[in-house]
Figure 1 (cartoon, rainbow, N blue to C red):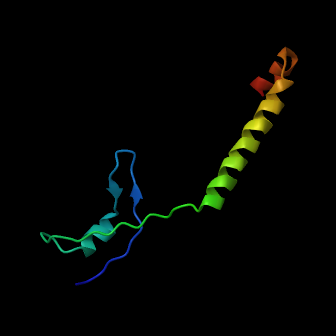
Figure 2 (spheres, rainbow, N blue to C red):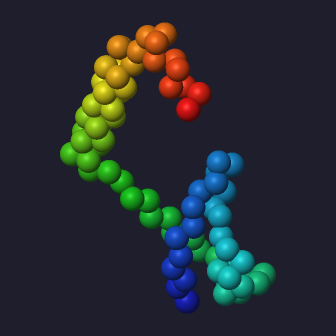
Length: 77
């Protein structure tokens, strides 16, 4: 049994996006065994990402809190 390693992306339709170059390497008309490995965030990475998102939301909220009609002149620049 041969092994081929490649890193396709999952499309919005839920399909694996393989390049033609990869498909040419695979044997035609043969059944394949596919093993999918997915990177998972650790609990700490998830917490850090959530905290980062919270800070970004707060920064945007504070930035736009002082926005008024006089600032609209910069919208067309």
